[in-house]
Length: 84
Image 1: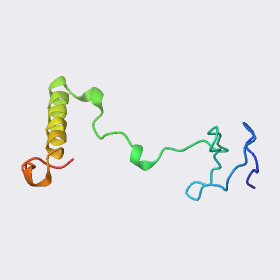
Image 2: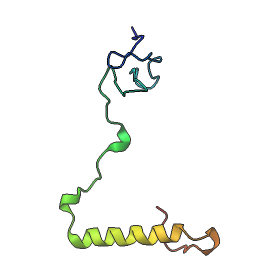
Image 3: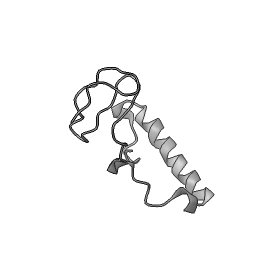
């Protein structure tokens, strides 16, 4: 049964969220159930602890090149760079 008021700040609570069934207070952030991690927050396939400094440097250089390329107008972007 959903609560009417937040037990933390006494603000009126809305209906439970459709996706998770949780009730969350818009004012103070109180929730009746702990938040569960979503599938989109899974760790990378290769943890950073296993990457060499050279691998990290290469990844950063690629990301920088892609970011700079994305700032250019569509017609002037380098087609050889993979999109992010």
